[in-house]
Length: 300
Ligand code: FES
Ligand code: FES
Image (cartoon, rainbow, N blue to C red; front, side, top):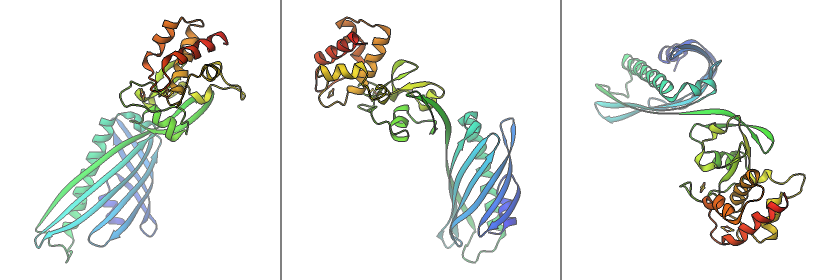
């Protein structure tokens, strides 16, 4: 596709300059809700199969955020008289732009996509492709949008920044992105407590919290209990009182117990059992776990 054609069919393009084979520097002006933003970045065409398909790759940055997208365009001959024009688009938004709200972004993306499709359709109709008999050109479109956010968590005393998607659960980000696998996942119903961590000092089930909700908060996981190579009293308690067998529930049990002991330095047995009622153990049984917490209470 030549540069003037690409500039004509791509919505919002105010400048397009070829920098290499199928590579372009682009400036696009787009209105997002009440805000008019100028985006600067690259467009590339890839996987070109003449008269059949290609990908349009978009990387654009602006003061209000970034967009990375990929649109696959396909022409498929249905029969002697019909060719189907279709495309799939995926876009990922980050920065302030991502916090504008899915509805606005989705509306803008959908209208840009429709505009692009219309221009492409017109362009194809205006040309005489001998391979494409286009008495009728049908079309179908699909697109998906995701949003990413850069969040910063004070994690076990250190600031950690990580890029997450709006839908990411905190437990998944801790385990998969920050590689703190001491926080476990034992259910998908907020029942077992294996994922318990401390957020701002309070025990919470990290499978019920979105990672974006932890932005700016202080988070402590089981990895943050020991200090200078010395085990925390709760860890000692579980060790001394044989409070674990397989250990799967143990990180969550300990974090819940730490929350309790911060609020109540000398809990009764029934207070310990009540505090731990949201944490399940399938192999040790609860007697030794209660003793482990009592052991910790006397050593804190
Ligand atoms: Fe969170 Fe079970 S994994 S409560
Ligand atoms: Fe195995 Fe609790 S120690 S589930």
